[in-house]
Length: 127
Figure: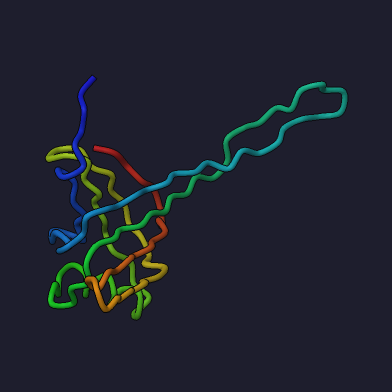
């Protein structure tokens, strides 16, 4: 089994790598619809609609106009972005998403951090 090392990851918006990101996550979900009928003694299910969402975190850098600022502008403008979340140099999740939230945190003894949350609109694929 091949092992992937986290430092080979990256987040891209369109063709631009988002600067200063050091962590991302993606969650895919399928609704399970109950098909149990009277007389059954076990529940039965069938897959329904699927969805996905995720987060990206790192250090705040709004001079990154094609990455972090583009994500902020998408949130403020209500527009979608095309995301690629790389696990290594060749494999990544991709899909179109809406930026749901941006959280910024500053501490006197630390750096300014940023968290981006997004929700997919349409299919998530893995390459």
